[in-house]
Length: 424
Image (cartoon, rainbow, N blue to C red; front, side, top):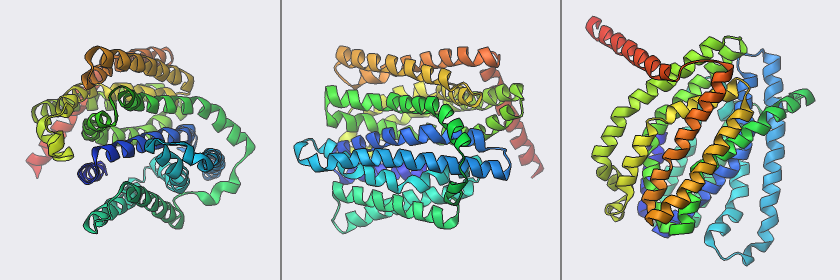
C-alpha cells in the first residue's frame, strides 16, 4: 500500500504544478490533523478494550466506539459547514480547499476508519489489505484516467479522493467489517470508560500529528509553498521506513494489549524490546542505502524539476534519524497499553515544543530547509528518554536491552532461514 501511495505521489508531482501540489499537501496535512481527533480518541481505545474480550464485551465496545465516532464526526462536520457561507471572504486557495472538501471527506471515511481499527484488532490483515487496496487503487486509477483524458486539475483530484473514500466505506458496510450493526449495543458505562481513556490518547495523537505537521506549517510560513513541496518529497520516500514500522506496530499493539490484560508485565517489556530493537538494527542498512542513492530516489519520485533541489540531502538526514524511530514509537504505544496515556501525552507535548522551537531557530539561522531537517533530531532525543523514564517507573527494563534483544532476534531469524535453505 505504501508503494502504491508513493506511485500516486510520483504521478501527482508530475501532473500538477508545484503550487497545486503545495495546496494538496496542505489539505492532506490539515485533514490528517483533524482526523486525528477521531482516530486518536478511539483507535487505541478500541484495541485496548476490545482485544481478547468475549463477544458481548466486544460488541459493547464497538457500539460505544461508533456512538462516539458519530458525535465527533457530526461536530467537526457542522463546524466545517458553518464556514461555507463565508467562503467568499477567504482569498487563500489553501484555506478554500479545506472549507470545501474536508467535511465531505471526513464523513465519507468514517465506516472505513472504524472497519480498519476492528480488522487491526482482530489481526485480519487480509481484509485490511483489501480495504486499503480499494481506497488507494481506485484513487490512482482515477488519477491516471484524468491524465489520459486531459482533465487533470486540482479540483478533480479532490473529487476523486472523495469518491474513493465513499466506495471503500460502502464496501466495509456491505461486507460487515465496519461493526455498524453494534451501534445499539453501546452502554453509558463503556462510553464513559472510553472517554476517560480517550481524552489523553486524543491529545497524544493530535500532538503527534502536530509534531509531524509542524514542519509543513513552519516551512510554508517562513519559506513558501514551493519549499513545502520540496520538503514533502523526501518525506514521502520515508515510506521505506514507515512500511515495516507501521506493520509491526499494528501487529505488536494487539500482542502488547493481550499480555498486559493478562497481567504479564515482563512479556510487555519483552515485546517492546524485541520489536523495537529488531527494527532499529534492520533500519541501519536502509539508511546507508538512502545515503548512497538519495539523488536517484528523489529524481524518480519527484521528476527532473527536483533534482537540483535540497530534496536528496534532506532524505539523507531524515533516514539517518529514522533509525531511532522504532524505539520512540514502541515506547509511546506501550505507555498507552499499560494505561499511562497521560504520560504519553506529556511526552508528545514536550517533543512538539522542542520541534517548533527547533524549526524556527534552525530555519532562521540557516535560511533554508536544512535547518528544519536537523531540528527534528531534538524532539526524537527528548521523546525517547522521557518515554523511557515514564515506562520504566511501571515496568522496569534497561534501554540497552532494546539493542541486545533486537540482535538476538535477528540472529535467530537468520539461523532459521539458513536452516530452511539447507534442508530445502
